[in-house]
Length: 156
Image (cartoon, rainbow, N blue to C red; front, top):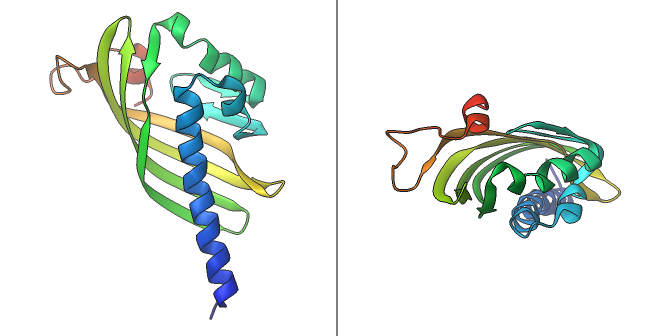
C-alpha cells in the first residue's frame, strides 16, 4: 500500500507533466523558440513534420516553420494518458490545431506520443512525437482532403 505522501507526489508529477504540455503549446503558439527548446532535455528530440535533435536543432526547426508557409497555429492538447514510472513518463495525448498554411486556414488533428523525464527537479521532454490524423483546408473539411501538407501526410 502506498502512503499519502507517495500518492500526493504521484498526483503532483502527473499535474507537472500536463503543465509541461500546456507550456509547450504556449511557447509554440507564441513563437518562443528558446522557451520551447528549454522544455526538452539536452539530447531531446522532436519527431513529426521533420526530425529535430537537441535543443539547437529543435529551435532551428520550429524557427523555420514560417519559411515553409506555416505562419500561424493554435495548439490544443488533451485526453492525456500518462504512464508514470519514477523519473520517466510515457505520455499519449490528442492534438487539435487550427492553423494557416500558405495563407489558407487549415484544421489539423493528431496524436502525440512522448517520453518525459525528471531532470534537475523538473519534467522535460526526451522525445515529443506527433502523427497527424488529418491536415486539411478548413473550407474543404477533413473527409475529402485528409492531407494537403506533404510533411503531415508522411507522418502517418
